[in-house]
Image 1 (cartoon, chains in turn yellow, purple, red, brown):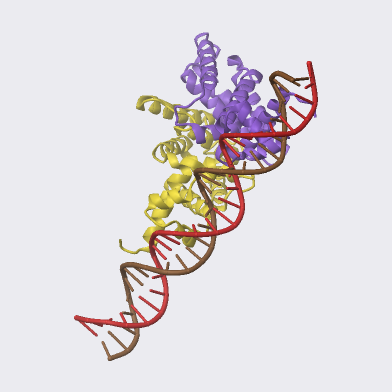
Image 2 (image 1 turned 180 degrees about the vertical axis):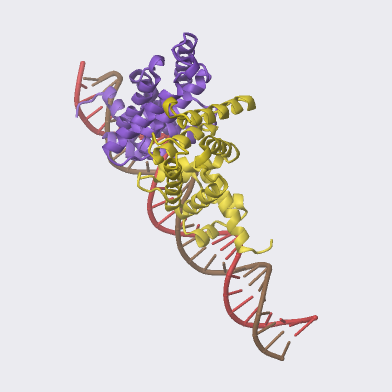
Length: 191
Length: 191
DNA sequence: GCTCGGCAACTAACTGGTTAGTCGGCTATC
DNA sequence: GATAGCCGACTAACCAGTTAGTTGCCGAGC
């Protein structure tokens, strides 16, 4: 086997993402990760430090890729919710890792910097759209963002299993429609 | 100390609820549970079988008490959402245990019978209200229930930490208002 | 073009501590 | 004194992290 530290690192990270997503931090086994990556356990410690830091590396990578792949569109929150919904379908790992993180780490203070930053950005984008009149201002920006994220979690097979593709697309329709209602104008302020 | 098997059982169950809520199944330590309950570890095995069955006992008790304490009111879903929201405040254990369960157990099939039953009941109540015209039928009953439950999760300090009591009551207001919008009549069908 | 030395990448085996689960006996109570 | 309730001590397995040593690669020197 060719020696390629960078590639080994990547393999370990991918295997760790699977293991942590499936079993959480406490349930994950370092030996299993190494075996799945086809690497030696000791490499985990040379590359990542320890089990916890390995989880951090996995989680950070997840946050970065999610933020990159699902940019917010304050002008069309229903569509944004739909895309988050879809991502929970295509990346079932993601929500699980997020949940493990909040359960096993979240001393409810421990929001990782990357998440906090991206949330702040998104809330700012929503606030700007509200000032511009493109979104109603009945909810504070942070809470509107929370509403959207909470609803898009229904795309997760974990929390809300849907049976069959037609049930799934109906579910998606429900979610985007719900967000549309949340950001709809009241009658008196309709254009 | 007086010998009272029933009481010891209760203490073990309560201590287990704390431990499992905080650390999950894999992270929970049987010795810690016994110590917290002021009982001997071996009693866990005589009363509950093993660690997993102890978790089941904790979880079942949680489902039973939740269903009993927060009855659904299909005629006033916003208020129902508000009460679920409040319960997530007063019983932070509950949502955590639910999440642990879905992460560590949920082969996405493993919905415990009690949960499935109570969900079916609630969905049926919603469906009846829809037929009676007391709720709009734009969403299938199961999905409407999901929407309400998802939104009420914002009352959890885990998933959506709120700082300060005023932020919390604003959050509650947001949630009940959001549910109200979801079940509001469209203009043309307004009474 | 060859080789040889140094080093980064990698490995197998081990360690120390932890943990779920068990077992034989003790004790309060009736 | 019978028995349900309880306990201390034990075990076998497990697991994160370490260490001493091996292997393949690459560039300097000839």
